Length: 423
Ligand code: EPZ
Image 1 (cartoon, rainbow, N blue to C red):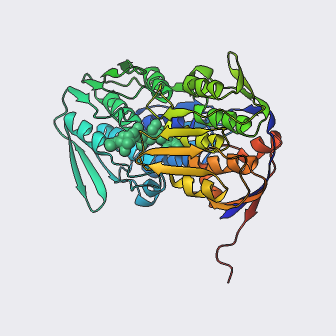
Image 2 (spheres, protein in one colour):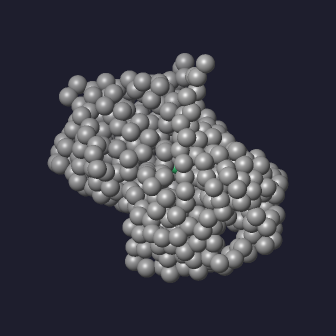
Image 3 (cartoon, helix red, strand yellow):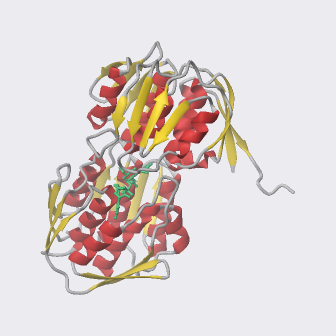
């Protein structure tokens, strides 16, 4: 346990290299379960969540090595399909190993994921999709048990374009030899396109990722697979916002700019200067931003995972901004913490109304989840004075080498270990 100590204000300047995408690595690691031979995955970021997923694959009996952003996975000789609760509790994305396990081995048991600080996180779309494919599902004592029974073709319409449900059902359907599964109202995120590319490399017939209809005809070929994960668009967006919010000047390298078109439009509207190139974006900002009205939406809309960071940026705008959170309606635990730093934010239903102030002031604050903590780091660099960001460990779940990367941009971060149990 520990906290970040940050002295502000500082204008972040310089270059930042973007790592591989956490939210592409996790579903691809889960999908490696379905392979009958070696899988090599490159550009995997060294993050707590990635290590948790690797621990889960090892608990299944798979042999996994991870060094210098390369993961090598070998199939389990004698698989264990009963995934330990304490691993699923740590990260809800682990639930997505249920489908590939039951499809490949006939039965599986995984803990029902709990909620988390950004709101309730049900998995009803996942379960009803698995049932439509013919799997028998039982939920009891906080666990989901699945059995492979009469497998059949399925047309699954998701009530909402759920990223996790889309990925979970794509991966499961890929195992079912000769079965056709169609997913309608599928999520269209770039990470889903990357997962489709990975599944195709395993010989699966799958089309449509990136659109709202994905068609899978199952069947995995036994061959070695090598895949390079796409860059992390949310990490890239976080650093872009940080540079703009601190009136800095910097270059984001190794990203796919078109994965963030919605963010670039809003940043330009607020007065930020952008130079967008093939795989880099230069950012500069020399004044308080103009206010914005943002509607969070599934891809290609403005991403919910950049909502907290954008709120920090707009807290010193020269007017009143509105951010409506349409994906996770209660994703606002960072609001109270930003208020402690002087931000003027009101919440009504799932809309945050942000009245821009001249400047923020440093304060001790509390990180509640991954992206909220990233927003507080940005606010601390914007603020006059010293901030302490407690429970800062959340940030290590999603930002590789975050201390080094901010230091390289001229932002001083000191990580102070706290011995929780000092008596
Ligand atoms: C993924 O979460 C991401 N996580 C999240 O990023 C991201 O915020 C989210 O997609 C939305 O883009 C990973 O990819 C590992 P959803 P996921 O299913 O799949 C509702 C981060 O910071 N829903 O697309 O859990 C749900 O409640 C994390 O990196 C159901 O009702 O999100 C939400 O309102 C945070 N039933 C909406 O759908 C279900 O069965 C979208 O959730 C599934 C989802």
